[in-house]
Image 1 (cartoon, rainbow, N blue to C red):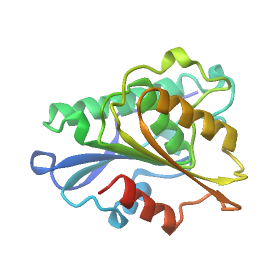
Image 2 (cartoon, rainbow, N blue to C red):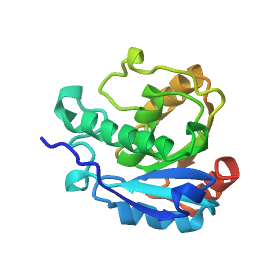
Image 3 (cartoon, rainbow, N blue to C red):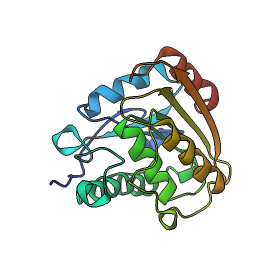
Amino acid sequence: MYTHHQSYKTTGTPAANAKGALVMIHGRGGTAANIMSLSRELNVEGMAIYAPEATNNSWYPYSFMAPDEQNQPSLNSALLVIGGLVDQIIAGGIPADKIYFLGFSQGACLTLEYIARNARRFGGAVAFTGGLIGEKLRLEQYKGDFAGTPVLITTGTPDPHVPLTRVEKSVEILKQHNAQVSLKVYPGRPHTITQEEIDLANQFIFV
């Protein structure tokens, strides 16, 4: 098992002059630089962009639906990395309601898990193929009020890693905490990010 260091790359507008911040979370086998390159296709001009990097290029070792103990302490460490980065952004002068999140696959799962455990009014969130984490979802872990935060979740079906049933349950939980969730399901789409999904992110979240 492994834990993570507070390591990230940054690009875009310097935080002191930025109109907001975007936290981009890579998937299993990905890198900070890899997910950050996607920002060039998003309407994020004027934002400070941060991409944390996982130890061993993986935020947790097993499936996001594995028994909880199999993914610890890596998962809790990953959540602390994201939380520490958010605290740093806020301390630098960018309020929570101007902070956005985007993740793909394992990074999408981590995005949703972090915001659901720390619900408040954020700028918005994009989860490209992901759901809340755990063999069984423990509802007592999900606290706070999104106060209408827009969240876009996209997925293929069937997906080799993320069952649609878990995505739909995640949408239901986020809505219970007053997130404004848009879900788009693509039959037969491979485990990737398509141009249409990027366009949806620009339409619903980065407006």
